[in-house]
Image (tube, rainbow, N blue to C red; front, side, top):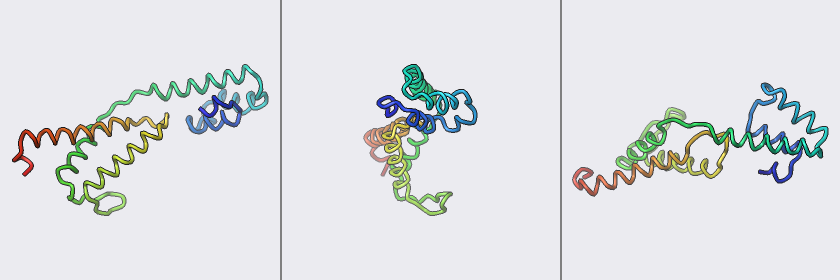
Length: 153
């Protein structure tokens, strides 16, 4: 968005560096446009228009990447475990320290909320699916507790 508001060769170069890492190594024509053509003529209306279209194309490409996975379900299982056994200590692999299940779930939920707010177009992680899986697990366990009061003690 910063580039669209104030188009310049430096802003375009920074945008592309942030959103297409390594482009200078595998996209020679793009590199030449950004660093040679547009940089030499920053006020050329055609170059500005081409650069804006390039930025829009990069955003559309990042938005159209399909995501497939079960991470929302996995995080639902993690939250369900933490909900049922909050004080069980789990051993992390790196670093090898014990941490209670409730803290793992809260830290992961906090990270997902933070990452969702950051809204990085090249992240390709469905953070909302993670949060949805966690919320679903809590709601499901609450429903089960109402239906079977003796099941959870």
